Image (tube, rainbow, N blue to C red):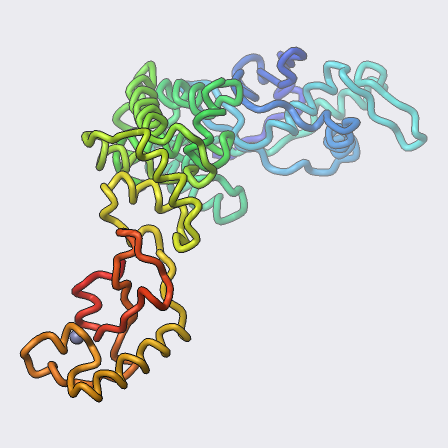
Length: 388
Ligand SMILES: [Zn+2]
């Protein structure tokens, strides 16, 4: 729904918190500009050039762009335009002055009456997001294509706005929450773009499917708290911390929710795990360090997660030639496993392309990735043996 409100209407009852450095309310209290827990007002920074530019645009009759509000239980919150609205509000409250063409500074109260009137009666175009869930969804899809780039979670917060979203945002997109520092060791993303909240929801629904997250938000829309979400999230983090107490940047952004669900019933020797993490991080053959955590959780089963470095081409060529020459002299297959068998392949000489390199002593049993621990096997036998 599109509407026009004047600068004066939006700025009526404008409240600015100097202590928190943010615009709180406007439109006679009906509009929440920045909820308590949100980021600071930025346009006053570095000399206030940006807030002066917003005011100068209005005074010159230039547009300041579209504003987006979200309807929440009969009131409104600013979805896009917090900084611009706070600039206008602060100007009407005489927090700063703008210069006229002659370079003379003017506070709002010192502008000529006609200028003040013109400023306050300037219309601003506002899109208010309201309607049924599916209407709002369709609307956001369209405006997101047109340019207002919102994250999925920002859109879902608007679609399912209400008590639950308010409570959840106060926990997960609250830059003043002292737990954030810890959480960011495990969860990737931007707090104010709702990335932590998204992750918390994906964990609790045990799925990263949009539909699953939305179903949960719809179901809990009118809950007064987000306690279940918070408790589950904290439980996952506490579990991860207990097993991997030494923070490493590779831990950030792993699927801790899935790991918790898969492995939390297992018992781990934390001291031993800690030593193994250390050792694997120091091991050059481990090419994907992020795989170390689940590899250890899996009881060292999922070696493929480590992307253990393979033998290079020169090594494979040398071993192939050596093995093939010896096999031809002995009259057996150049794949040692084929040669040991009695089948039709027992004397087969495979082409280089038909073979793969294998660790004689498995890497996971301490075998090195060097020529002394390399043998060539036919592809079928290499697959059957597993490559680590
Ligand atoms: Zn073979």
